[in-house]
Image (tube, rainbow, N blue to C red):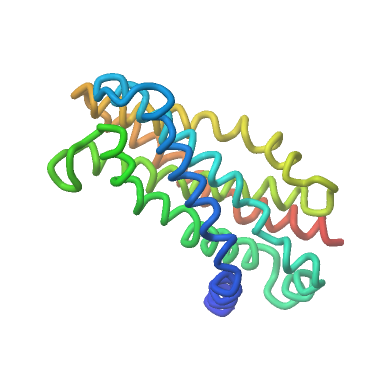
Length: 223
């Protein structure tokens, strides 16, 4: 059942490809504007690059949260799916599909932005590229998991995008802090294993708790 739900989400997203491209375009454009608005000099860009890339990734993820249940909720199919598959499976499938379609592209495109922000001068000539990608690989799923809970809680509310932002942004702060500090430590040639371990621990906690919490909130919202 889970595989069928995941396949359905991916097929629906393929038809609505604009919704997938917008967060990625937003991510690239926000980061790309900073060399023009701040300074093109490498020392300045390297100092601000970790925070800029991570904040842009956080906002791009937040921008895409409204896609979670909108179409299914509007056409009434969400309630039917919940009855057939159960809320936890529905929430889990949507979370995984959401990360594959929005979070993973951010990870893949991040080396290009690393070059733009002078973090490195090529795809494989610097360890900093891999550290940036690894931090996003651990952090973006956690952002999607937490965002799913917030979106489930605010599903039936008017202007739910603003409500979700209020709910999840405080929970995003620790991920932003440790994600940024991971890349900063790498740039300053310090150990970053501790920050990566914390990001991994946050991901494990979110993996255990968020699908169940999102499923319960989803069931309440549609009842």
